[in-house]
Image (tube, rainbow, N blue to C red; front, top):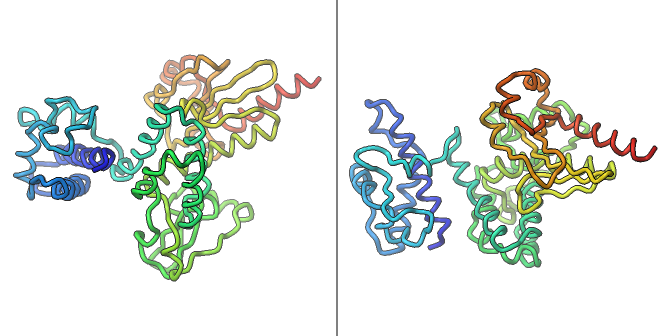
Amino acid sequence: MKEIDITKTLQYLATGLVEWEKLDLDKRNEIPKALRIGMSKLSAISILEGETAPTNLPEFFQWATQPIKSWKPAEKVEFIPEDAAFIDDGLVSDFARDFALSGKNSIAQVQEYILKKIKDYCTENSLEDSYHDVRKLIIATPVIRRTELEDYLDSRTFRPLNDYFKNQEIYKPLTNLDEYDEYHLCPRCKYIKRQRRDGSYSCKNAFCQRVVAENPNKFPSLSPIPKKEADQWLVVSYGVYLYGTIPGIWEVKLAEDLTNLGAKVTLWPHVDWYDLLVELPGNIKWAIDVKDWSYITPERVKEVRVQSEATETFIVIPDARESLRIPVIRRQKAYRDALGKLQLKLSSEIFEAAKKIFKVTQQ
């Protein structure tokens, strides 16, 4: 059994437990979706490993008081302390809280975990080209023919990562999704649209849908995939799409704009320490983290690190998010304190600043 399957199962369980603990006492007979999925996976893995697994909530809570590594499949998962349990002294343990995912879509976040595993593996094995090519693939081609993916997996950079693809953690059969007579693709993100009750289609990402609606000439329609051909196609999981494809569109767009100006741009340097390294005349180097945030908080700003190899480090917000009132945020003390040596810019401001540098050096 692959460690990633075991880790995902434990993440579902930890996340579901934390969600369950937050329920009102009169609703604790309900099982959160993440916990239900985790218990199902726990049972399936246990059967494959010849282990017994809890079949109901009381049995699960009893199981959760035991050290996690007493469950045989978890024995070799290095990051789990020997004595760690999900429930400690009648309460959800600190380990479970640290391991649980936060946010509105815990299932998508569990799916996203594959991207972290790939990043860690590429870092440990100096596979920067492999990481770069995987990121580019899931951004540019979230829906792909089986035969085309097979060609990628046979290439030099993808070959070391074959296991991450062949277990369908990244790309899944299109037929696993809702069954439509034909599958429509969003012309911006190129992901499968959802079908509304009235028979029309819309992108799964609301902001993406709005951008397309406001710029119809910029995003021409793509040919749908007919139902009879659906089994020939694969699609990235929703978590990979949400946390890899969508933000990656902005990263690639900014990189292309700056490259067209004449800058040397490296995407995801050092296996994704940050998003863009921009090298400009005068030995100027910018480290850029592109954030497609629907809202900004000082806490989120503090997650970005100043890069010592760069002249300046920027958090860059796409101009389409101008409703965030970036100039106002810059003046607020809480944000100034959080930013420190970081600079908060819109993508157009970064582009204009780079253009100014080129203009000065050409005079």
